[in-house]
Image (tube, rainbow, N blue to C red; front, side, top):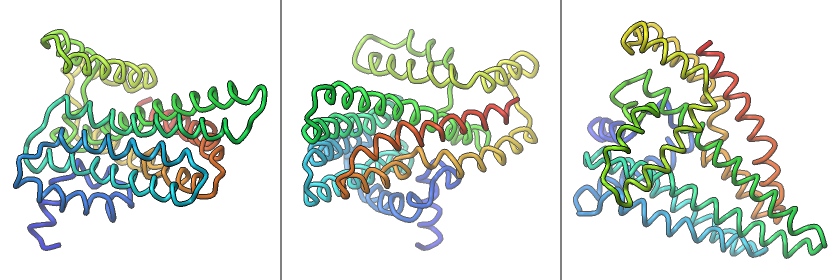
Amino acid sequence: MGKILDKEYEASLKSIETENSLDRWFYRPIGFRLAKTLCKTRVTPNMVTIISIFIGAVAGPMFYYNDIRYAITGIIFLIMANILDCVDGQLARLSGIKSKIGRILDGLAGDIWFLLIYIFLAMRLNNEYKHEYATWMIYSIAALSALSHLIQANITDYYKTLHLFFLNPEKGSEFQKLAELRKQHKEMKPGIEKALFFLYLGYTSLQEALTPKQQLFFKKADEYNNGRISDDISHTITLRSKKVMKKYLDLMTFNGRSIILFFAVLSGYVWVYFLYEIIILNIVLAISIYKYEKIFS
């Protein structure tokens, strides 16, 4: 890319620091080129998000079949959906078309893809292991895996947005406290947007419940310094946050988990993905929370 394109490309990202290697070298460059093209059309970021939901939803049914052709098809559709998931955010930043509903839809897209994946993988395992007690055990494991994923993705998003808040308040403007969001929700008119925003309140409630030291830090900042945080403190937090983010958080992103998912469906050992999600990634989650809590101690 030339210098002008490089600047535009960087402007299309939240921050280079919060992007992992696969995003920087594959997903984001493709997303940037598509976003640049769509800037010249009437296509909005929310339209792209909705399209990505339907494309990503194909993966679940494809992974139901123990056939490498279906597995590859599902993987291709999931990769295409994730590219579009990059496009919607990059298009929003390049075009200036941003909305709270867009951020909520963007988060829901990945949840819908993986919810269907868990359902169809559980159905596949249930067909493979026909046993008196297998059904309830398989669906319980799938439900636990889906719940684990929801919490992991939630906290990963929280810490990455928190990192941006301290790195660059403008780019980290999406970081909001629960009290602020409740006030906004109360002022909204009844409708689908308010209903979706209510889900976002639950999302934020969980984030704050699992990060007590961070909440205490902000409470003290509000009480003693009118919410202002010094540049020195912000710099120290971002340096320490970056180390934890690269070492642990990236494992809980789409790229981190999809590598194991793709291996599982290609090899036929789909139960490996459930165990990875429930055991390995929950250990990574616990370590990440511990490390971040220590930063704010």
